[in-house]
Image 1 (cartoon, one colour):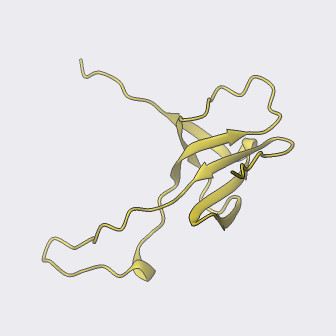
Image 2: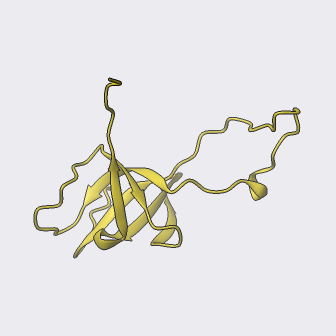
Length: 95
C-alpha cells in the first residue's frame, strides 16, 4: 500500500467529491463544470509543522486558489501550505 506524506510545512487534504446530483430550487440539474468547488476538506496528513493546531481527520477551511490539486489511487487530493489554512471547522452545541 502506498501512502502520501507531505514534506516541509504542507498539509494533504482529501477533496474527493461525492457523486450526488445537485439541482436548483426549480429542479434544474447543475452540471459539474458549473459547480463551485468547496473551500473545505478533510486533513489526511500533515508535514513538518511545529504546533499545527490540527490533527488528521479534522475538517479545515482553506484559501480559494491555494495548493496543488492531483489524483492518487483514484482519489482527489489537494496539497496546501500550512499557512493557507484559514480555520478548523468544529461542531458546537446550540445554546
